[in-house]
Length: 334
Image: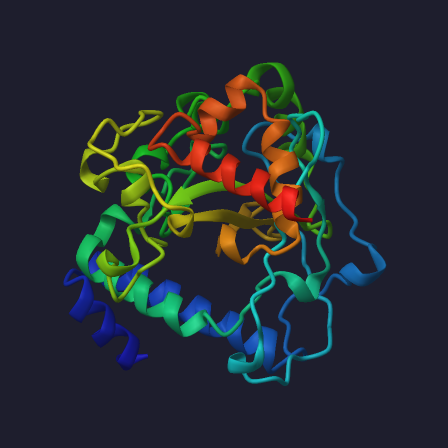
């Protein structure tokens, strides 16, 4: 305990920051042990594996109302492999053909909630540095019992800023970011989903963006992929504004600078509080390393309508033309 407090004080330097980092550190450590070492010790007592949770209908509760439920995290086979042997396995949501705007959620098996791999130490060093240099701009917790539908906590992003999003209702998070067809295709279904999400029904989803990084000789040693903040794509972090397009000078990238950025997002509801935990794990894959999957990426991009292309930044920085030409050449070689 004293170790984590000292670490927090060293990198944030305030009692509030100490508490936040302590909480995050202990949570991460507990998740690591839970995922890779132990499946035996659970304090709650509802067996999710048999889906026998007894609860009032979720639609019948008022806004902010929740009946606490005891819950037992299901047992699963422990991971006995060292992290150095676990290769990252991103699931890139290629969707050849016409683009359909949906939530894209699917059921998640309990043993897959927190996925660790051989990039864990690299990502830890990036997070540690970011917390130490950015402080409450990247970690913040709101305590607001009167507004249960408001985002109350956050962590380290890379394609958006926590200070812009935290405290917003679900609808405003998406409208402020100009999410394509949100009102027409997503608003009602997302509201229903978040209201109805059951304690024993965790889900996951993936998204897809294209990100540009600096040329090989100009990249930072700590974070060459710009995981912490996508400066080459979105400009300087402190000058970023919601739904803006980076207007700074940008050289057209080479194909070696272009990578697929995909997030694995999970959502599960907690039994006692009723709160929903939303986790994000980011994978960055160079397009030159996609192999045969490059053809599916090309078909996916071809299906994006104009509003989706704009949202994904196709007009920004010249990457669209470079990537399109590369993928067409690859298809011609097969």
